Image (cartoon, rainbow, N blue to C red; front, side):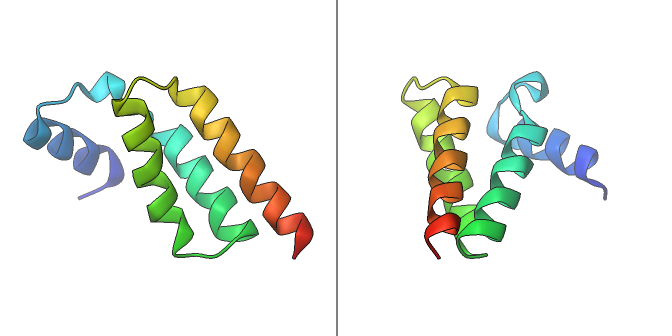
Length: 77
């Protein structure tokens, strides 16, 4: 199973539209957190992004804020 197939299957399982799954946004965020903070922070950050979006946050804005936080943390290390 490739990433697209997994995304489609996961969306179907959860009753979500595939169009709403912004895979690039999530992968970019995960990469930035993993490289600037700590690897296990990547899935945690993706989950937190999902919580924020589920509560009404704009996905791009929330991801940008988390990326900026990760970059600041990386610069301080």
